[in-house]
Amino acid sequence: MIASTSTDLSNKFALDTSSLNSLKKDAKAGTPAALKETATQFEAMFINMMMKSMRDATPQDEEGMGNSQQTRTFTTMLDQQTSQNLAKRGMGLADVLVRQLGGAQMNQQALAIGAEGGATGAAAPAAANPFANAAAMLKSAAAAGADAPTELAKLPATTETGRVQAPHVRSFQEKLQNHAIEAEKTTGVPAKFMLGQAALETGWGKRMIKNADGSNSHNLFGIKAGPSWKGKVAESVTTEYVNGRPQTRVEKFRAYDSPAESFKDYANMLARNPRYEKVINSGGDAAAFAHGLQRAGYATDPNYGAKLTRVIKNSLA
Image 1 (cartoon, rainbow, N blue to C red):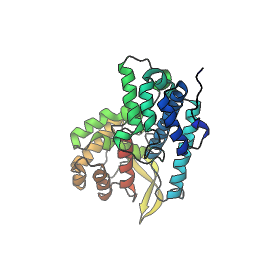
Image 2: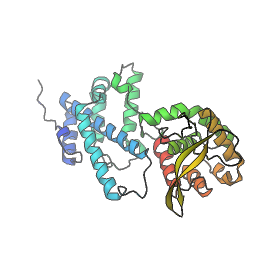
Image 3: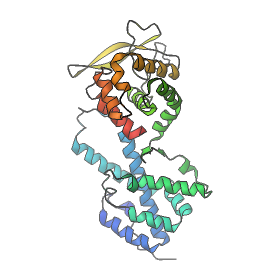
Image 4: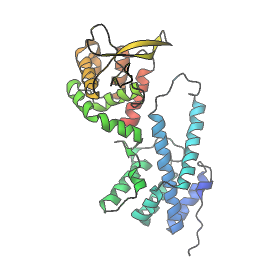
């Protein structure tokens, strides 16, 4: 049996850079123990990226008591330590990396652990993004005909920028993607922008407006039923901002027979209402689209534009 000097980081504080440096030295030796520990730390980084993306995908109350720089800092530290603890128990990724990718690749990956931005959770360039590297490595394993275990099949997908996409985000996008693409043909607005707005309005489909009988109204965009609306109507409690202050009201909203009808009505509203002309011509810029909607009076929430921008960029970009 080969003796190992590998540092067990699973019992260490997640931000212990000295332990990470020790791991990098051990990884160069290429021992099985060092390989396993490196893979475990890679899994911890994977989990941390997933947790960060899930928090980014959740709209935050800009004026909430818990929304301060200090709270965000400690939340980041908590997520990093939680990731460390979960990786110690293991969810399958480390075993896949050790078994399928081989020592040479894993030793190279170990050198990236603890690089600038990796230990602190700060944003890193796409080329240095640890999850982007993971995605590339896993694709290599699949191309070689490797049979990944069930745990790997359950892992979240990534966005085009290498961010981890939470399962509920991926499910929401897959369910509505085709409807958004059809709406894009009518408006010219990128499908992911409209998906982001539907996600913000419905909490990723978890806060749908209900009809009086409890059935789904399929109103994905929070469109109210004004005097000109001749279709079905659903009443719901909503929050409106008057002079910057939130007020709870019961309003009438449009109701549809399907998500496809909701997207079609939303697309027609954007395309035909002159006040959304600048929104239509936002040029594929997420921030311009989101803040353009707010300026056009789509929502009374003073932070609507900022919230929508974050959802689009962090979850669907």
